[in-house]
Image (cartoon, rainbow, N blue to C red):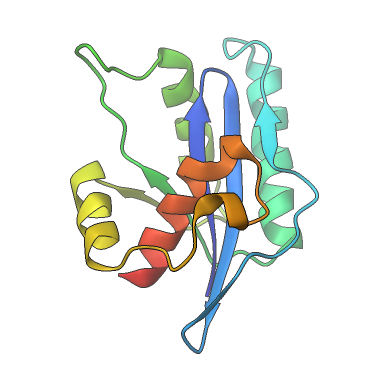
Length: 140
């Protein structure tokens, strides 16, 4: 199974592809590691973001998109822009998108921690959260 995990930060969608086949994990090369929307209130830019993401998932034959649930209010609340980007992905007709509660993801990672340190993965530092989400999902 090949998944794409998405971590939203401000107006960026940081992505990480991860594949698991016969209990072996693989990080496929990807032409893009981050998608950005300059103005999240611009309908055309959101549509362009949605189209670019859908095309990327189609090109890399992604089976499922996974996103960690974010906190909507309180001290550590996620920004409004991230919820708009998430909604743009959730409404893509051809994508299977799953939102994972943060507590569940932490349980999966506690039960099955990654076999390597992130710094040895070859990914960029801003992809760490997306990598952990993808790994947790595939190791559940």
